[in-house]
Image (cartoon, rainbow, N blue to C red; front, side, top):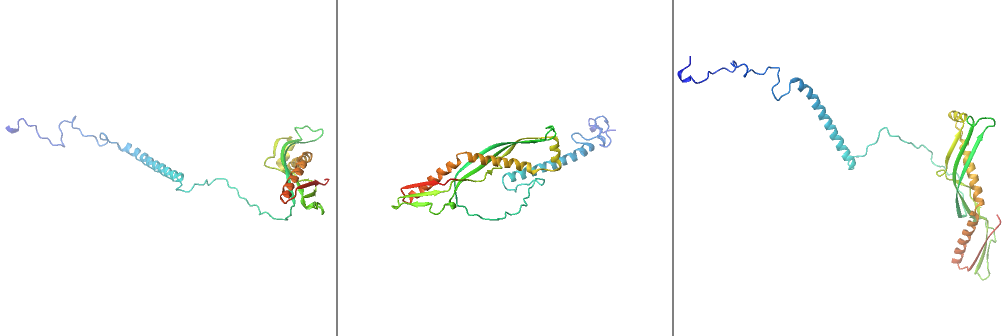
Length: 257
């Protein structure tokens, strides 16, 4: 029974024995509370968060290293698999020295197309045939060899105002084939020729087109005005030199080649 003063007061109840099971039923032990993750979700998100942290740290390190490399604070990286070329050539050997007394008075640059074909009689071209189109570029110099000036080639007048000089005819140097400007334009080879290249390479084939290119450039230089230009340039050089020494008349002649 309750006291008279406590008629309107609710009956005090122990928390561990609630009377309203619907409103005060505590959450089961296996049910997660509102706003929190259960044990399964926490187990899944734990490694994921760790992986994200590792990736973020790695990305930050890469950004810092790239920034220091760009700004020059870090030495440049080298590719460990980069191709390297090692030059094991021997030092050049000086075999001889020759004194030159030639005056190079003119130079000609030439270009020639060599069309070289080698085939066999009664054999189809697709089986045994070689044809090479080679563009050769070379240089030829025209010079006067002053070491061949004979005794008495320089004659001075009695008054010392004129001089006559007799020089040897200009000569042509060997053709200097420019490898950087020379190239194979086209090449056609038969089936047996290509099979032969698999087992043995023939360096004489390339040497042959070089030789032909040099011969044709040399012939073209002889037929050109290169020698006449060398004569004129040498005469002009000597006239200017001797007139500066006080000679008023300078005559330069050339012997027959």
